[in-house]
Structure formats: structure tokens, C-alpha cells
Image (cartoon, rainbow over all chains, first blue to last red; front, side):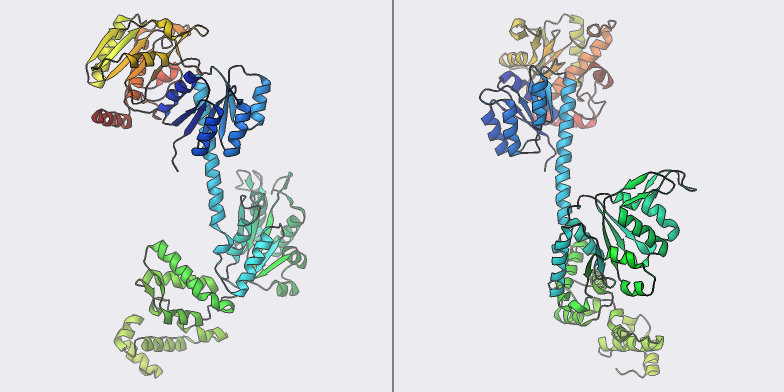
Length: 448
Length: 177
């Protein structure tokens, strides 16, 4: 979209139209003129304009009526009414109908220049605002949560349902299952989407810092408080606040939080003024909070306040059928970001990826693919491009803690298997010399 | 060749000086002639001002073939219908422009006469309007002569020189013409 300001001058007087046109052309504006209402409407239908300079007295249709009709075509148009004899009535009428401003002819050149510049800036800001809103809409739509499994389809429906309400949501799921993504999807599909989503990592909040962090502070509230500072609750006004890892907050913070959730009112540290903020709360945890309530480390009343609407995210293992979709999504994403012509993974690698336990869930899968895109050779990712540790992780998935020697033994065996028993290649893979590999083969009685 | 046409402009010494200055700036010969226009044709009796657009139209009707640009210099108070006044007017990428000394003169503002300042302002406005005829738009550089000026203090603030960008544009325009 061009930055050139476009202007339509509507006046039945040719000398007015032409002189204004010649006055504005040197500004670099695109200027068109219309001698009567129908011509103006036709021009606006054919082409877009930022500003319309409109004479209030026109044959056939007066400026106020024409303004209304022009607005029906483009509601964002900056219309400036020109009148020879300004009366309070006409001015009020024009402004009530949504005119940007009105001028009384003749007008001081400086006033007109400033008025047009301001109208152009306002129009540009409106356009930017609309395009940013569009960008926000596309930034995180529910469609961007990848998954065709029944579990994920159910979750997408839940997100769409709950997003339309102001209900407090708790998202539970293991690490790496996409809790924050779901929280963002809820916010950016809600009516609060154009207001901030403030994220608080509860794991990083200490009881000593929490008050000023959440509630803000007044100047001089404590040593080092040189300025008044807004807290997270205040910053989230009209938007939402996302408490990540809510299970990690201390007892004192739990109490503070409970009070604010109930009243949505608080005072800044060192202040007396009660601040009211309107925000929605979304929280997430990978802990079993019911157990935490039972053992007394998490307040029961707070738990019920936060857990009004619960979303349980499945582990990647539980939705393994989504793995190919996720893998292709991540390959596409990182290939584009790194400008590498990857088209996917080879079929044996995909099978292998589907069989892995992925204790780190989607995040771990994403990291594995990112690494593979970095080290691999296009067009297909193969097993050897994937990070090694995930290959031998399976036995420990049972909860068994292996000795270092056992891990070393299994890892060397893996290298030998991969190289078809070629010790030199295995030594290269392991980044040790051949003698070391022979010694380890002897030590662990490995077959090759 | 550029032509300076005087319309109700009394300062013979000023017009000669302006001619020399424009010759030096635009590196072209500048001739001076006095118009025989009947100024009543441009007069709005109600406003007691003269239409700059009407003057330009008349200039366009009487263009000498040899003149690449024609600049009218007048002592009359100029206007266009929607504005209270204009210092001058030009046809963008055209051949004609007009400037008025009426509101460039300190006497108009009740201030002591300052012929040197008047000459400086007249030069800046003449170069500015001629710049438009070469296709130059208003410039955002506050010191560039192509910066738009809607009151005299703004004219005084800017210089009579083109900024680098406008100078390049002018050179390009000269080459294509």
C-alpha cells in the first residue's frame, strides 16, 4: 500500500476545485476533483481516498447528505467540510455526522495545511491500526495449534468455547505440551484480544518481589523505588493475565492472589489509592494441584477460584497420531526460517519419530526438528540428523536410573549399529579415536 | 531561456537583481519583460485581491515559444478562492508560475522597511515556485528552499538553496526536459 495521501475535492465552483488541486499537488498528494455529488460518489466507489474536502452547499445534494453517503462507502474517510458562512448549526451537524473538521472559506493557508496533515496522519494511524488488528487475528488463530487427533480436536473446541467468555481457565499438562500456546489462543480469540496478555512466570516470583511486581509501587515506597511503577495486574487492564507454572507460587503470594481475584481491587505498594483493574485470569501448571491441595502446599480456596474451567492437555505420546503432522509443520517452519529447501523427513525416520516416547513432548520434538534442519542436508531429514540422546532415552523412560557405564555401553553399541559395525565410522560419530572404541568394545563385550 | 514577467511590480532594481540571481542559480539566460495584462481581469472586488490561478492561466495563453519557464513577479496581493492569500502559485511540471512581493514586504506587517530582506524572500519564493515547474514537491528538510512556507517567518527560516535530494531531482528533471 502506497504512503501517498489521496484527496478528493468536491465543489461545484471550478475555480475552487482547480486552485485547491494546484495548491495540493506540490505536496505530493494524489488529488482528484468532483463537481457534483454523484461524481464524488462514483469516484469514491472507483478509487480509495484518504481525505475529502467537501463544500457544504452543492446543487442537488447538500454537503451533509453527501457526507453521509460517502461514509456509507468508506466509514474511515476523513471528511473536511468547507463552508462560506459557518453557522453553529451546520458545524455541529457536520461534526455529528462524523466529519473530521470544518473550515470557513477563506481559510489561512497555514491552518489548512495543518488540518490536512493531521487528517492524513489520523487516516494513516487508522489504517495501521486496522492492519495491526488483522495481524493480531492471524498471529494466533486456533488453526495454528497443530493436531488432528481426537484429543486435540476436543481441545480446540474447548478453546473456542471458553474464549468467548470471561471465565477463569486453568490449563494442565506436562512440560512442553503447549500450555502457553493454548493460553495465547484463548486470549487472542476473545473479545479482550486487542488489550494486553500479561504473562507471569510464577517460578521466577519470590515472595519478597511479588507484591511490587504484581501490584506496582508508589515513588519512595522502598529504597530504590524512584518512580511510580504499574504492576502486572494494572498492565493487564481490559486484557488478560497468564500465570505460568501457578503451582510454584509461595503461600504468601497465594493469599495476595486470592484477594485480588475476588475483588479485582488492590493498592500499589506504599500507596493508599485503591486501583481497580478488569482482567481475565488464565493459569497453567504441570503439577497435580489436587495433590498439592491435599498435602497443604496449595490453598484449596485459590485452587477452586483458578480452576473454574479446566483444560487438560495430552502428552505427545497420548496423541502420537499427530506426530507426522507436527513434524511436517516444524520442518516447514524451520526450513523457511533458515532458508533451507527441506521438504520433510524420510519414511523410516518418520516411523522412528512416531515410536519415540518424547517425555519433553511437543517442545522436545520441535527442538529435535530444529536441530535436524540446522545440521541436515536437504531435501529430507534422516535419523542421523536428529539429536542422539533421544535414541537411547527409552530404557530410562521406565523411571530406571542408569549408571554412566551402562549409558556409555549402550551409546557405543548404538554407534556401532548405525555404522554397520564399522569401528572407524563409529569412532568418528563418537568423536573419539579408534583405539578408544576398540578398548570400550573389549571392556563392555560389545558385538559388532 | 527563462522569462521574468512583471505585473504591477514597481521595483526595477529588485527585478534586475532577481534576474541575475536566477541566472546564477538555474544556469540559464533570464530575460525580463513587462506584461500588458489588464489586472482588473484578475481582481476579486469583494476581497480586493488578485487570483493567482487566473494570472497563471493568462500566462499559459501567452507563452513565448523560446521561454522554457515563465515567472510572473507582481506587487499585487494574490489569493486562491479557499485561502486567505498565497505568496505564489505554480503549475507542477508546467512552465508558468507567479510570485507576489505584497506579503513578503515588512511594511505589510507594520515593520520597518528592509529591502535586503524583501529581496531575499522574493528570491526564495521565486526559486520555490520555479522548482515546482521542474516537478519538485514540497520538501521536509526545514532548510531546503522547497519547504512549504505559509507565513513569512517560515520563508526566513529556510535557505534559498535546494537540499541534496531536491537538487538531484532538479538535475534529473533538467536532463529529461
